Length: 208
Image (cartoon, rainbow, N blue to C red; front, top):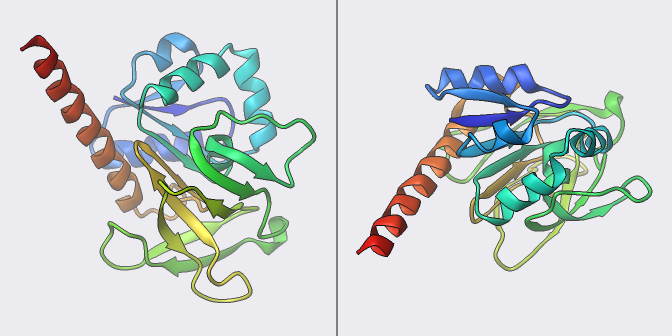
């Protein structure tokens, strides 16, 4: 079962995409629901609102703990910001959940009117991925253990990093839940399944 953090943002769209790839999906608003899932998607939305609501619902500490323990987690747009260890141009005192050794620039591509679409080459997916950017961040810098999955190829932002993966964590600047292409979600589901297999192998080794 994979959860979608259901505090604000594109929750229904992510739930629909998970169901499309044949996965049981659960909206997560409380710690008990978080404890029931094997992986989590943090959707696009408004990052400052989402972290504030996570505090109100008592989710910040449980989220940080599950992420630190290796729960596969996928952040899109605002979700990327919440997974980042560092933020440029964030709101005063803005918190994150952390886990990804990246620096993101909030609203890097501009305001809502500067939203755009582009076909990207994304590592692990055959053929172009149609990416939709809405008030999106980009990744300013990555740590040594972070794999860059995609960069913008054209225009004034050419070369900017817009998709990354580090261990069990994955993030995109764009909104894969909006475009109707389930391949990015399938990439994350595959990551969750590999983590489950590895966890079972580790448990069997401990019993032996």
